[in-house]
Amino acid sequence: MMYDMVFHIKIFLILLSFSYPQKYSPSNFWKNYNQDQKIAFINGAYGTVSKLKSHHKSEVRKQYMHNKNWIEPYYIERFYEITDEYLANSVGYDLIIIASHIDAFYSNSDNYDIPVLEALRIVSLVQDGEQKKANIRLLRAQQKNNKSQLK
Image 1 (cartoon, helix red, strand yellow):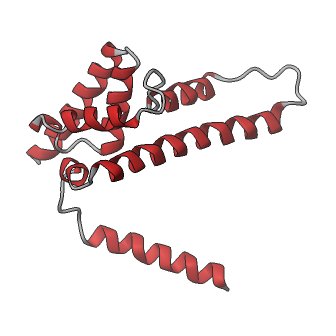
Image 2 (cartoon, helix red, strand yellow):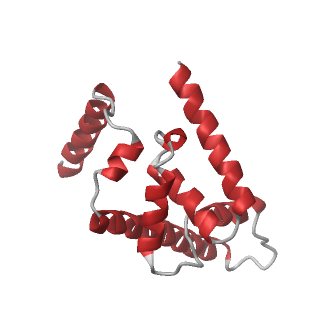
C-alpha cells in the first residue's frame, strides 16, 4: 500500500518535471553554488560512482564465482573504464581543485549547456593526464550542445 503511494508520487514528480523545463543552463546551476556546495556535489558524485562500481563488481562476483570457466565480458570491463573516467585519481581528495577546474570549464561560453556530470568527466580526464580523451569528449559535448541550440 505504502509502496504504491510512493510509486505514484515519484511518477507524478517525474511528469511534473517534464512540464516545467529547466530554465537555467548547467553552467548557471553550477555558478549558483558556493564553494562548499560545489565540493559537496563533487563528493556526492564521486561517492555515487564509486559505490555503483563496487556494488556492480560484488554482484558480478556473486553470480559467477562458482563458474571456473567464466571470463569477464568486454562490456563489463568497458563499464568500469567509463566509471573511472568520472573519478580524478591523481587529485585524490582535494576536491577544491576539481571545483575550480569546473569553474574554469564553464567560463567558456561553448560549454554553458554541457551537463555538470559531463563537465566533471572531462575535468577528471584532464586531471588524470588523459588530455586526448578529454578533448574528444569535450568536442563531442560541444557538438551535441550546438545541435540542440540550432533546433
